[in-house]
Length: 102
Image (cartoon, rainbow, N blue to C red; front, side, top):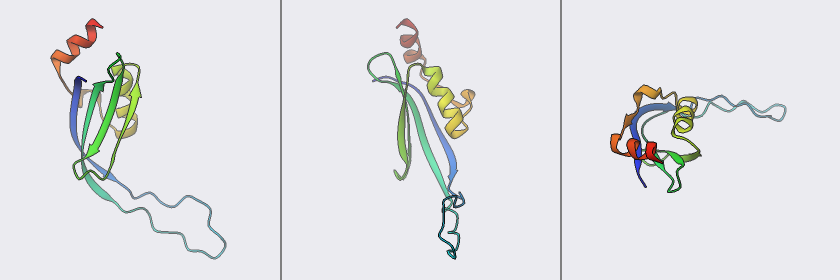
């Protein structure tokens, strides 16, 4: 699989307040713990002309991926989910040229 774009970014996770139902008389739980993470992102091909946006924190506590029909879709998902602007990506020019020939 070819890696088309990479990025390392600092993210702060957590701090979300409890939003679910509680029985009468129960105290509202504290917000989720706040954590500062260094996260590595990459956009790579899936072996069949589509793309995978993957991420993993450097401590390996948070990770995941999403599948996309186009690289632009993957870039847009990263913007929506993580606030990553398209200009922040470091593109692999050789892989980008190969993608354009497909």
